[in-house]
Amino acid sequence: MKKALVMLSLPLLITFPSLAKFEGFTEKSYSNGQYLRTHYTESNRSQFHIGCGRGSDKKVFSLVGFKHHSLYDWSGVTNMKLSIDGGKVLSIKGGSNKYDDMFYSSGSTDLLIREMLTGKLLEVSVIDNEKEKIRFSLEGIEDAYKTLKDKCNLPES
Image (cartoon, rainbow, N blue to C red; front, side, top):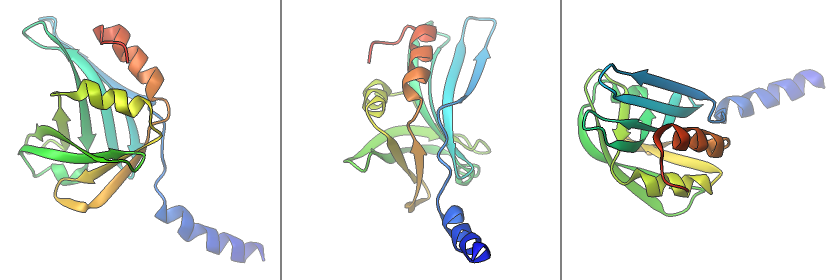
């Protein structure tokens, strides 16, 4: 009986992605005062980032990013579709460089991040295959945002 339960449970574990909290982070600083910090969550070998930074123009910005293996050979600017808790589909404009598996968007991300702060699950459509969707847990996003807000002096949520 135990063997049958284990065999039945295994396919269920394989089909559902592991949904991690916003526990990872990256940070880069440059001698000219520029910096970039992101916090990310992982699912199915993909990552979803929220972040902030200061550019060479000394202006602070926020960003969202999506890391996926299909972006490695892709470059350009496009709209990425995502939804929070299965609600309406939102579109964000951003881009990626060839041989970089990361899509970044820094335009109008403050509103999107505020929406994510109230949600539980984020669903991102993969750029080259919109039928493929990656789901990310939004657990821990409040703490990640607080760290970013303090680092970059972002607006209150």
